[in-house]
Image (cartoon, rainbow, N blue to C red; front, side, top):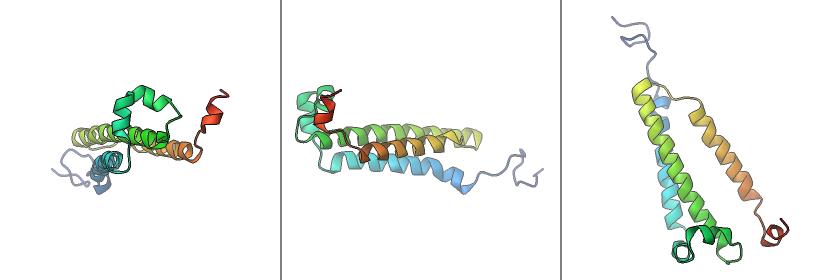
Length: 127
């Protein structure tokens, strides 16, 4: 017997927004992957210098390109993980936890604030 919500188990129906959240997260992850490899980047220089050493050294002229490439790739991996997790949650529980929306928003705001205030090489020597 169907309830007033339209489902036999009494749970409210899954909304279109709930179904689209995982798709949007995965799409944003793919955009991050594409952006990390298509925009002017320094993957060859990163591999030649070593990934950790290349990101710590502020002296190379292409430091910003190196850092941006790595952070876009890392963000893509994190967003892909959140997207696939939310897809699994929607399929099993018909819900998406609120934290799955607020955490990426908070990380995005922090990333924008960090990008707005770049660290200059002369400031890093004072620390």
